Amino acid sequence: MVKIELLLNEKKISRIKETELSRYLDFYKESYTDNLNHATANVNNFPRWSIVSGYYAMHDISKLFIAKVYRFKIDREVHATTIKVLKELLNDPGLLKLIEDGYGEYSNLDDDLKDAKKERVKVQYYTGTDFMKHKYANKAKEFVGINVKTYVEKILKLIEGSNV
Image (cartoon, rainbow, N blue to C red; front, top):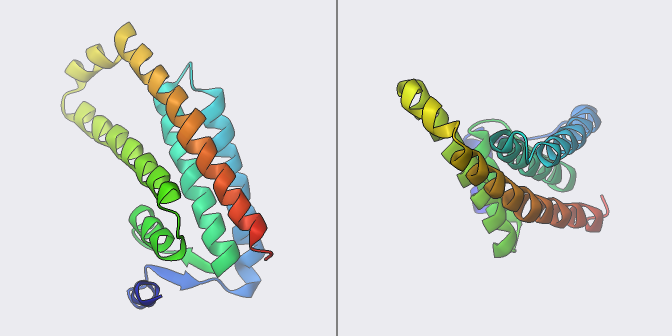
């Protein structure tokens, strides 16, 4: 728990007050569910958005787990800090790899958007091709079907097993 103490001291995480716990948990239950449903529903028609929503489902259920079981909330550098907290709290390398891969997929899309802003015309023509649509659709199906759903199921089991 040494790193947890460091994250507390750096104000990257904090303890959740009892008075805000219920609202906090309800928000993340709703948020991860919405993101998971959106990711699943849009795999074929909007695969890039499906990947983004899938990652956010993973991210939000992670914060739900951290809040419900350990009473911490993530305050700063939320994506990196969430993964750091999970590394300290979980003893499951496979589960950690799923969230890290999810963050990698999300980051790649974020980088694509930044590049698109710089080179709008080039990206506009290449990302709109049938080849790229097919590529993203396959990537989204695999990512949501395997990474996201597996991760969510495992975290739900951890939450249920915590008896909190």
